[in-house]
Length: 424
Image (cartoon, rainbow, N blue to C red; front, side, top):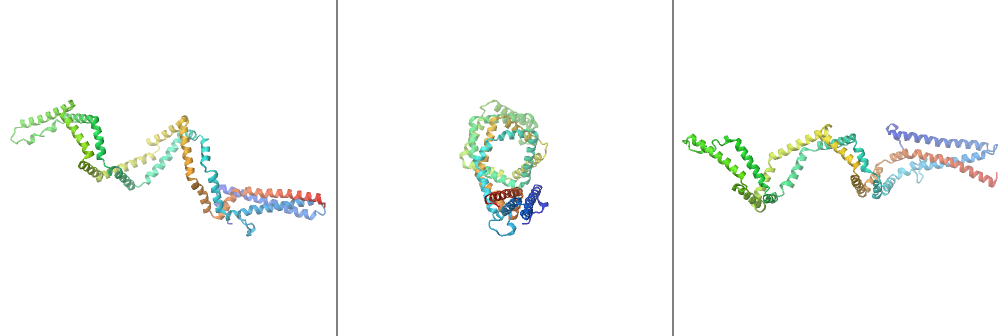
């Protein structure tokens, strides 16, 4: 198996690789040491009988070391390259291991009951509030949110947004009939007498305008008189028209039952009824509405409003000292303070978070676990073996050392019992 060059490994993996190589050297050194001891003891045991015990311990240790070397090596590759059955388990069964791991995580970790139990015992809202009430943290959240929001706005196509807004306006404003709902609203308005304030406002505005625009009546009627009429007559006619207008408006303002007011009431009643029941009036109103919305000038105005709003909002989002950013950060800090001091809000937020997490886990647990399965399936067999060996290989080398020690003790014990029972 070709190993990844050391320079391409992460610092953590480089440290794991150094630890793995060190433990492999120690385990191999123990085997070599016992082999040397065995040779010496075997050669001299005839002269020194007690060396038979040493030879038995060394022999058992070598057997244990070799057996555990074979077992550990068989997990990752074929020992000595030989095609021995049930070896190189990880590279040959990589996909099955990934599926099993995914099923294990899904069954034992991605469970609604487990998630609910864990989250119910965790003061989520209080911890979030404690963190968020810090002005620096609130500013950070506001900055990150502003960056994301600005990025979304800048990524939007103005033409696409305008088309969406136009479609929404057509679906919700132009296509539905306005006549009958507006007629019903106008009928209720007139019945309640609320329109009288509008009439009063109009009369007051006209009176104010008349007081400030006396000269507007100059020639208003007199220009229609014969040219031979004296100028004094012209002035009298214009003055009379002005004073009559002033008196008329004053009368309308002073008399709640003035005929003009009653005429307005009657007109509004008829208009409300026609908007609800007269097809011709409804049709004319809908045509006028469509004409207004389809006007190029209205479309240009809508585009200008969107562009101006977008540019202003993006600028405010990018500016750390903008009023928008400051208000958002202040609001976040206030939310954090409430989360810390309001127990009822804490319970509600904790309940929302827990319910949302349980819902997501129950609904998408298989999809979440499949990330493990799919990721392992995409890995190269050699890469998978290397990753796993780097993670657990150093600990597995202790198995070799343990096997060496246990084998030595077992060999010594067996030889001692056999020698005691059967003699030399």
